[in-house]
Image 1 (tube, one colour):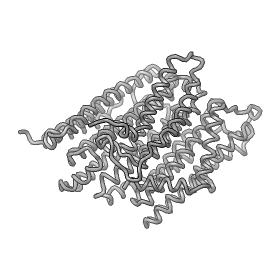
Image 2 (cartoon, one colour; image 1 turned 90 degrees about the vertical axis):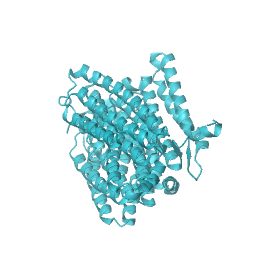
Image 3 (cartoon, helix red, strand yellow; image 1 turned 180 degrees about the horizontal axis):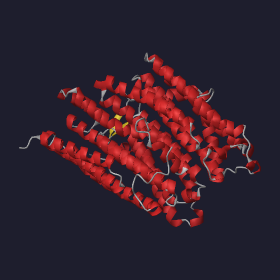
Image 4 (cartoon, chains in turn red, orange; image 1 turned 45 degrees about the horizontal axis):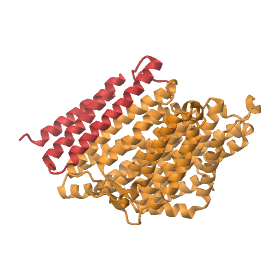
Length: 102
Length: 480
């Protein structure tokens, strides 16, 4: 069987790619995609820990299901917010949305 | 699992909140448009009724895990649930007369849902429940921050709040997933035990602690994850900003406290140091940046960052005295800051501006409102005999008690800086003159009611200490 560390390293890499995307990208949609990658990394983690460490319990699976259900809700709200910004400004670039600053 | 009535008792407040949400939705549907403002009265009265009806749901002195270990029924969770319900009721009163906010049923619904999330957050005893509760709190708040969809600033506030919130919660969740892997269980009261048995290196635990801390410090707006809060508070509708800066922040504090104490008892040295550093940075930065603000909402935002720093002292000292001082601080802070934001909301509704210049000569336009602002700001500044003084006193005493006198000294120095910018606002209110002095600031009835309740509350917490302090101590004792 593939050792668990492969999955964990994959998840860590995915998480880092996602985090980089969030920090480096300027377009809000791209940032959202980065966040989704991070959440997927979490799910890979959860499922592999569940499979290798506690396959007899259901906790890990339930956690993963809840994570992507919540992620879907979060994205729905996020996109709605982006649309309301886009209607006002005609852009969703995080650089140009800078009315509020000190 | 067999259901019986006694199982529902610990979640009675949450069930009642769901019922209130349903009532609000139905009223939004059946009432004619002109009457929608009255949903605010229904929400506020409903919150009052829930407070009363929840009395039988109060926990025993011995905390217990309920609902398969998902929730912990203890005084800490229960007390804060009551505080959030109180805060939501007050916010409903403040918001009622904003045409685009309080005349819309969905505003009240979103606030109620968010309150349910907070209530579950403070009593969550399982990683799954905790994550779900944090998101239930946050998602409605993203919408509320961007509620004025025809207002550039409000949409921007929602935009920023959402992006930072989603990012930090993903990082926190990665920490949760690692903790689940290390411990093989999601119950936060079993994680410490199983990690100890597993013989994991401390480094792995510290790493996941830092990841989790990112999410929590976003919630409490602690440095270095504070930068969203001034923008979001300035842009979002003022009653919402008040709710964000009090209830949501207090919920973050309770989760931070419970999580650190329960999950990481083996690395207290490390997280104690991190929290201490964060506390010093948070209060200093918050106070220094507040000095230069020209907009009162931004000033209050930085001041609330500073207050998070003071309250963090109570966590940083890692003692029972510290925890009770933090709980006391949060009670005072919640009441006081709600009052400050509420008064700003009442003024802003009439003057249409949140700049400091709008407050020139306010005492001549509305002496009572100015007096309430005086009480709220002096309490934030920590003047006796108001609540803020006692709260600061307890927090600094806890630091001295734990042999961290230097931390108390930094706190006191910060309190002096804080005094300056609060008094500056009062100078504008009482000493400056403006051309609009003939125009009185008319405060509507629900706002009058809310401001009176809060002002009396601030004075009562500061003068009648014993019941509040006993309450805080009972709540704090139930963490351990």
